[in-house]
Every structure is written in C-alpha cells, then in structure tokens.
Image 1: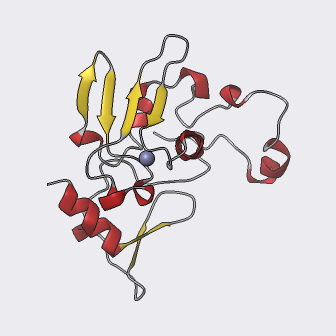
Image 2 (image 1 turned 45 degrees about the horizontal axis):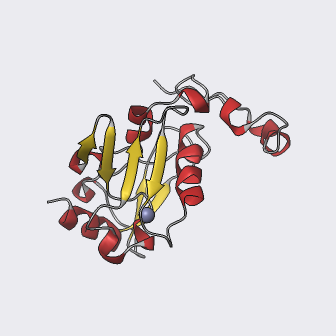
Length: 159
Ligand SMILES: [Zn+2]
C-alpha cells in the first residue's frame, strides 16, 4: 500500500528545507535514512539478476544504464549495508556519479517520481505510442515514459 504523504501545494516550499535529506519521509512511512537495501531494491530494475558478493553486499546493473556501455551489461553498481548508513551505493564507473544514483533513489523513495517497480519489466504488457514510448501507468503521478528500444535492450540483457 502506498500512501501519498505530501501535499502538492506545499512542494515548492518544502524542497529546500532546513532539515537534512535523511529526514524526508518516504512512501513506506520510514525516513530516508531508515530505508534498507531491500527498500532500495524495489527500484532497481535488474535486482533479480544481482550477484551477492558478500554479506548484504550486491552487484547489480546500474540504475543509470545510459551512463554505461551496453546498458551496463556487466553490472557496475554496488549496494551494501554500511556501518553507519543502512545503505551504501556506489557505481564503479567513474563517469556515473554516485550523486546521480542517490538522486534516482531519493526521488522514488519519497514518491517524487512515481516510477515503475522492479517487477515492471515485461514490455509485452504495455502498448507503445507512435513515438515508441511506453508509459507505465501508475495509480497516481505522471506516467513514466520509457522508449521501447530501451525496454527491449533491458529485456534482452536480462535473459
Ligand atoms: Zn552506473
């Protein structure tokens, strides 16, 4: 069950709060700093192909595949449980900044972007528009366009 916790009208004034980013309340009711690897995992499209390389330490295809050759066919993104932080994320590719990855998760965890979940990968279920975009329909928020070509690439890669 997803709850809508933010009021639309207040967004503009709340975007630059004095509180730290970790105090944001996420769509699952926990604060951003309380999220675990598995809360993050629901927004990792290729989570099911992850490799566990240690205790609660995984390598998985990057959430910013466009930064990578072949859509990050050889997974580059590491996600693990840290000592001080619940979740530590790092992409091994230098030109794929961690800040961009953190933003990706933050936007989704706090519900700013209503994104497809990791189980939404099968393009057969969706119809493309004339520009070749598939819009993931969600219960609220703006439909999330993903080009069919990208979906097909992701799908090929996940086999
Ligand atoms: Zn990356």
